[in-house]
Length: 476
Ligand SMILES: [Zn+2]
Image (tube, rainbow, N blue to C red; front, side, top):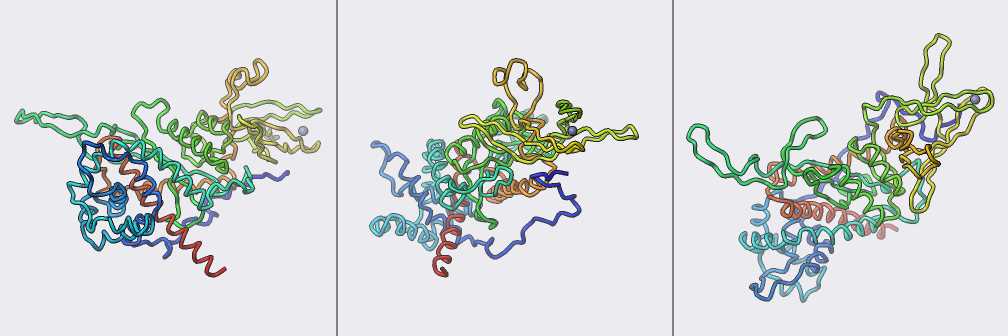
């Protein structure tokens, strides 16, 4: 039997638990996390991109970096009220002053206010920042990717094995529904006993959403994108976060595909994405054509489909698409038949701007192994193949039925669990919200919140990276 490049899946009972034990390196005190934020150069860079206050406006007492620090601190402390109270304390405020001294120099630090702004000053500043939340994110996406590259994620000059992608060569992405700041779904209601009309504040970004398990959550949906170099829990770098508008054509998956392609176009060392079952053939197709791998699971309802009959010499080999790969229908003497996966010798990527992917099959046979190349991962359109031969004309959803890395293989078993990173990111996001619920109404305010969350997380990732680099330079 020829060897399969992806290896046989190990039965669940024999798989070693992959969860890593919590260690000291995963621990970071609130104080340390605030220090991490204050020393993140990206906060200062972002503040630079905000337009100066209008000539008619009052001069501001606080530079914008103070308010960006507040956004990150709010995520660390899981509450705006707590953040405001903490930053009014000169001892906590000194954390930011030290950051300003390190990033902008002694002169800037000397002119920096001695205590934090009042709560009403925060609220006014946030209102102003809200107008720039899209611009801030546009700037920050670039900075976040730079940070990732600096930390050794998506290296451009590293060997890339399409059949064995490494964790730091892949994006982990996932959609999540945040809990609406209010349970109200309509802006007024009538009390049935008194007839009184009540007015409610409604979050314009929230809609009823069905989550993976089938439970309904009311809130706005966001897709988060992250990557990491090492195992350390806090070393993840968040690359992007995107709002999924209600009734957006294609929904979450379409927003995710756009985000993945944007990251891939800016980071040539990125090999693709890990995603859950929300990615179907059409989404795999888009990313595979762009040159990326999609590592996700097969849709449960996919039945095996007849693919083709091969007739080399006097042989007949009946090939089917099953479980995301080519299988041969083997007939037994007792009249039964079974679909046996055909060993894959190689996963090939071909093309320059638009890519095609192939499995080089090694079909076992008593007359000697037959090699046979089958396109996978994309669904060819009319005009891309000789007339009548495209997948579209044949009605074969190739990207849906033939995966680049088939699900029931050892490689998939080893690589797909990296996706759980995306899920643990969501639980950290929930933990950064007071009672796990949003406080912000509308996409603009929520994007400030997601920016604060991502800034806080990435600040710690950067600090850990720099600490490790320092330790290495001392021991080397
Ligand atoms: Zn044969």
